[in-house]
Length: 404
Image 1: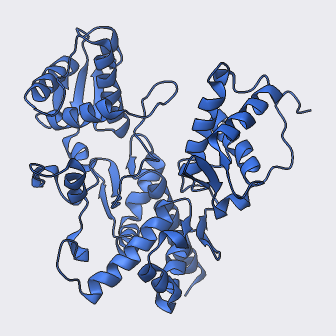
Image 2 (image 1 turned 45 degrees about the horizontal axis):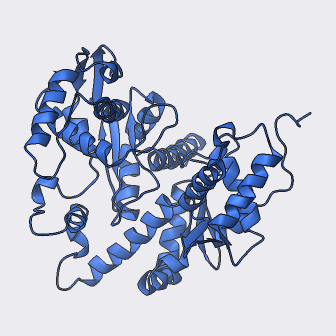
Image 3 (image 1 turned 90 degrees about the horizontal axis):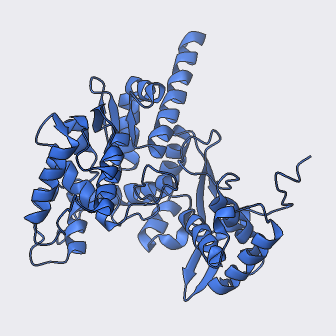
């Protein structure tokens, strides 16, 4: 093989690895928002699609003409660590009402390629009024209009809704605001990452939690059948393990069942894991407690830890250092005391967490970060470290005012 051919093969491998990691961090890549990332995924569509299908059982859809690539990640249980967030300062997560309005608005947007914010609001109001479960949408309420705007802004961020004239936020101040939208119906349909459509689910007579679980039921693994074949079982083992490894900050052996642990102990399982990590450009760390992927280029994650920018991220690292010295764990009240001491020690830091409940809010935000990164666990009012927490330690803490 010539030197040029070698270079081309190496370039393709690097592109494929980067494309995989880009999609793991951002399952929806649009040409408008990220032209370079989209062009790379479009160019290496076939090998990237094959990697996700073989290792994770996730479907990748690339639409070159429509300008988007959508990776449909499927998980058997809800993931509370990546909520939809409001496109305003604070980036607060969506509450139940915002998710409801998001779903209703998305359904009503399928009726045509263009609409206005007022016409859509009327359709949402009519749809909720006709539903016996969902509370009616009241445009006279500022809080309701704000929740509605947050849902629309989220659809805008995904590229499914494009403002042609006006600004969406103007509807918060007045329900008479004029905003014209262009709707991308094909992308809108792709936003739902589930193998089964909601119209196929019959919630009557069963709990909603059971109904939503039917959305992500995958028949190819034999789910819902009286027995499964060896082929189906092996497919499920490979996909279920890789999904956890490539979509979670760390994979602990304790989170796996006996069959999954036996699969990883086999030559086949180890080969699959190592080859998948190598093809995606990761370094695989294997420890007695579990597995962890390291991305040398920090492409594959939308959040980083340690984080010296956000207050919650800094507080998480400071409190984790304290927890690392207390293997039996600490109570939340003890962490409140630690947070009070940090606030007193650094008077110019965490200004939004000053006040009577400042320490409790700071601890809550820090624990949310630590829990999402699988570094601590909470049970019985006590916070305990998980094995991956041992990777982090503080040598010295300095504020920007102390930096020479």
